[in-house]
Length: 389
Image (cartoon, rainbow, N blue to C red; front, side, top):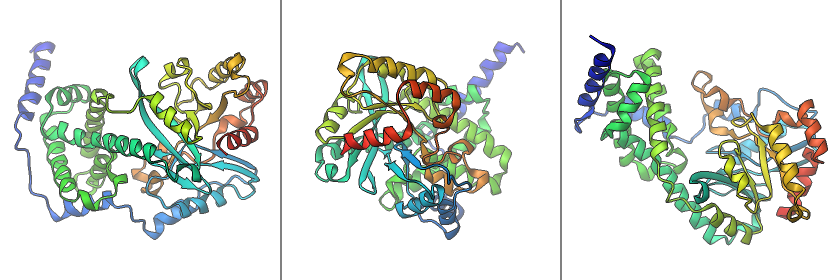
C-alpha cells in the first residue's frame, strides 16, 4: 500500500471511529473518588509543608519584587510563611499577587492578571493591574468586567470537553494526525473525558471556580496511572495537549474586553499597569498603551530580555515619557498550585518557579544594560510603589 493511501486509510479510521455521539461508560466509585481528589482545594498537612518550606532560601536577597505570581487556591497565610522563609533578611519589598481575572490581596496591595483583546493586531493580550487595597473596595465596574472574563475564560474547559466527547471532528482529526493517536487511544480518552464532563456538570455548585481549568483533565488522567500504566497515560496526555491547542487556537476573542477599555477602567482606580509576556504578543509594544512598565523577563519569555531593555530605554527618551518613564519588570510567574502536586506529577518547569526569584537582575551581562537604563530592583520597587500609592 502506498504512503498516501495508508495515511488516507488511517484518517478514515479515526474519523469513522469518532462520529458516534453515544460514547459513555458507567462512572465507577473509583472515577468519582479521582474526580473529587482532582477538584479538591483542601490541603493535606504534607502539602502545607511543601508550601511553607521552600527547597532553597535566599538570605542575601534584601529587595523582593514580585508583581506577577498566582496564589491559585493556596491560602495567603501559607504563602506568607514561605516568603518569610525564602527571604529572611529582606529590607524592602513589593509583593502583589496577580490571579487570573480575579482580584487578590496581600499586605495592603491587590492585583490581577487580565485577559483582554487588542483589535489593532487581532490578538489576546494580558495586563497586570496593581492597586492599593482601598482603591478596589468600590471597584464595581472593574469587578464586573473581571467576573465576565473569568467566566468566559473558564468556558474553555467545557469547550475542551465537548470537542472530545461530541466530538468536533476537525479538531480530533488534527490532534490525531499530529500525535499518531489511533482509534483505541481516542476511545480511551473520550470515555474518561465523558465521565469528567458528567461529574463536572453534576457537581458544579460544589466545586471551587479555581478548579474549573483545562488542567483538570491533565490532573484526572495522571491519577489513572496506577490503573492503566504510564505508557498509555503518557500517550493520552500527548493527545489531550494537542486537542487543547486546537481549542485554544479556535477560541473566540470577541468576548474579551478591549485592552483600551481595561486600561481606562484601571486608571480610574489609580492602578499601576504592566505588560507581561511581551515576546508572546510583541505588537503591544507598538501600540503605545498607557502603561507603567513592561516585563522584560519571565520563565516563559527569556529570549529578548536584553533587547527589550534597550527598546524601553529608547521609548523613555521620547518627550511624552519624560515625566513618567516606562519601568522595567521581571515576572517569576509562580503558580502555587503546582507546588502541591507530588514530584512525579508536577509540571517541572512550572514547579521550579519561585516567587521573587528573577535571575536576570543579578546577571552580569544584563546588569550592564540595566545600569545604562538607570534601573535596579530597589529603584523599581520604590518608583512603582509611589505610582500606585
